[in-house]
Image 1: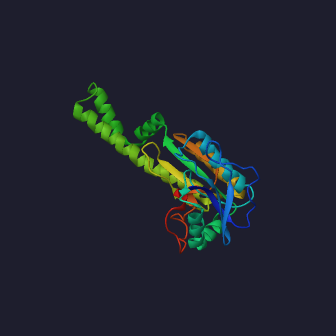
Image 2: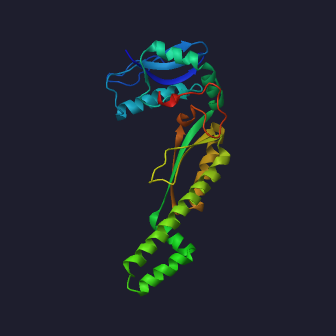
Image 3: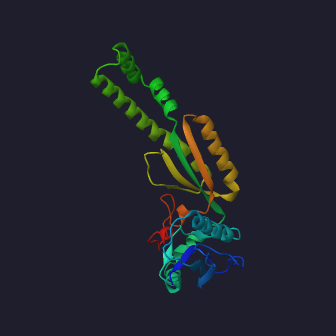
Length: 256
């Protein structure tokens, strides 16, 4: 029977409440595997597991139960090991790394921030800021729309200005929020977002972080800013670019 892993914590961490269940249909009972000073919260893994809403919520609920009583290194949904012995073996092999991460993440949560441009607002902004774009647009207007090449040039000027604005605005968002964070982890790049970043925030700093995000919304009304959290610190199970690297760091524990 394969073993589904929800998270890693210390061996002294309180066990999940009796009757806690996780993924699967019917839901599998949650249990604890210990190895030295570490422990993994696990259950039997169901066959053909898929990211259905019920199982995604079950995974999150188990982590919430564990996290309510202390620090936990959350595994991402779908983290499955061949068996219990493999889990305890990994705990033993990477004990120094997991212990360091537990210390680094104690008392911290993750906020994911995504930002995108409000198209009409940013187009208005780049037109107002760029005399070349205004001149080309006016020339096209006077020429009844302009030739194909004229329209192409205007499109290229606008696209270049928007791309430059995306880079500037993305850097400005991160710069405004970074002082309230212990670490920042860049998420996968996507054409839909000019910022996709996760911030590791002390629980005591959470209100200041959210206030800073609200100030960004006020200062940059041409952006749509989405803040998701507090979350378990999924993006920081492994050291990020702005954190020191543990001597035993290896494969991404967040993906199994």
